[in-house]
Amino acid sequence: MGATRVAPAPNSQWLFPISALHNTPSRTTSNIPLEKELYDRSRGVEFLYRLGVSLGLPSSAMYTAATWFHRFYMRYSMEDYHRQDVAASCIFLATKTEECGRKLRDVAKVVCSKVSQIDIAKVADDSKEVEECQTSILLTEEVLLEGLCFDFVVDSPQADLVDLFEACPNTAQIEECAWSIANDSFRTPLCLLYSPKIIAAACYVLAERAMEGPQSSSLDARIASPAPSASLPTPPSHKSQASGTSRRAIEYFGFNEMELLSVADALSILLEYYGAQDLQSSCQFLASVASIPPPHSSAHREKLYKPFAHVAALAAQSANSATPEHAIGQSGTPVQGDTTPGKLSSGEWKPVTEPAP
Image 1: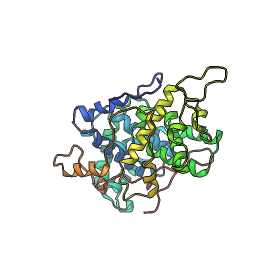
Image 2 (image 1 turned 60 degrees about the horizontal axis):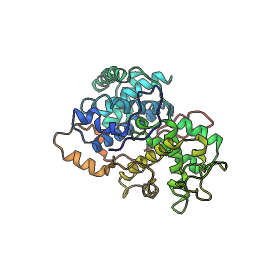
Image 3 (image 1 turned 30 degrees about the horizontal axis):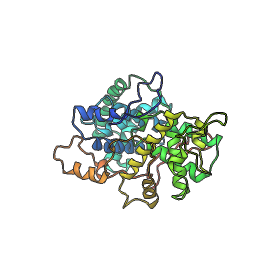
Image 4 (image 1 turned 60 degrees about the vertical axis):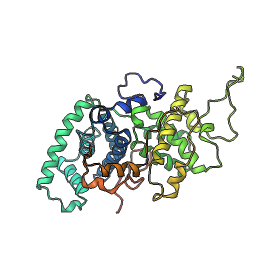
């Protein structure tokens, strides 16, 4: 397996080579296939987003919680800690560290509502289910704190996107698309593999290519190395950039060669993730994004993702599933865009509200 080519991040214990995904506790101690773990990570973050939206949390709290969720499973197996329990504890902890406090009972009621698929107004404050959920959140939170080593600091690619939007304004459609892709990036383990700037650039470049259409510049052209200085001889391997190619993100961040390779790898993983969705029942735009050819400069490795419909079918056939399903998890593959954090507005994190069903 090829290792992820990422520039070193000083003092970071939370950036891993891509090979580490093949050696998580879920893989080594529970023998859960990688495609199943990635599928359940995606579903766990979707559940986390649903909780955060229902609780009216700011987007920043949800991004922080989603990052902790992925970090947790680099230390513990999904067989031992169900994704919904971990998602709930990540959300509850984030309400404290992000200064958007919510009562434990309120968080537990939302969890019970989502798991049981009933209106929250029908969940009694003093019900046995709510009491048990509160206990579960607190017990899992203790393990979460230990797994995180009490390191709560998280930087999100959305913060870098905000800076990019302000420095290099583009169309509202491209900016909104980049924001949505950044939200979706937390459904993947990208936050474990690359720095926020790398992820932000990948989301922006992919959004530009998606909105400008198949006749526009390729991803390779958009992330190509900058032209050599006129005072230096041109290397034989240097390829001139296509005329009119947008390089806003690449030029703004000033990436070196190694970082450009990491952007290419991040783009490939995003495209794999979108390609794993049930494209037949999804919107046409998602299918068009999934059909974008990945950069040729990305690492040659085995694909991380398999079609989610196939993974879900295999999990349903397994009598000894490593991650028993709650009611919330019986709806099949994750759905893009139906419950995600909102778009940034006026330079501040925008609180979101749950959309109508």
